[in-house]
Length: 178
Image (cartoon, rainbow, N blue to C red; front, side, top):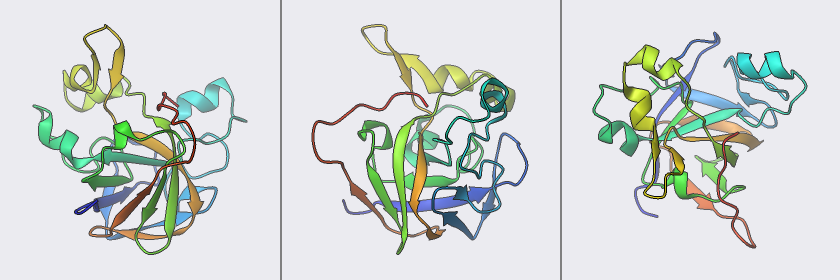
């Protein structure tokens, strides 16, 4: 896939909605993004911790395709929606569950599912949630807020790094919210 790249990387040590742009992030195998509030083996998202703090953290890394930011009618920059990695040139939402994303020279993230956008998005920009959670012609909910993954192999990721997509063998399983 030509032109499949990392546009920007972000992290934030606090549980804020948007993440700060940085020169590089360090992915730690089985944990997530070093220095990010969502780092951990078990779930770190506050609403999920309240429900069951022992759940595995299937949301260690959040990825959004820059094409989404280009399409929405709101002013949204990379990192504004809380993603760790902004990509370009790969249909993240069309990937099957278990796809491996090789980011840069070393890091590998396994896609676990779809981000389930929440009402905090309207706190960032009123009405944006309606653009990120829509319905298809059959009336099924369509989530456009990116994908979540876990770190299979650690490494440094920077803007401009290539992304290599490795789909899993066997029957593809569509992404579901995690």
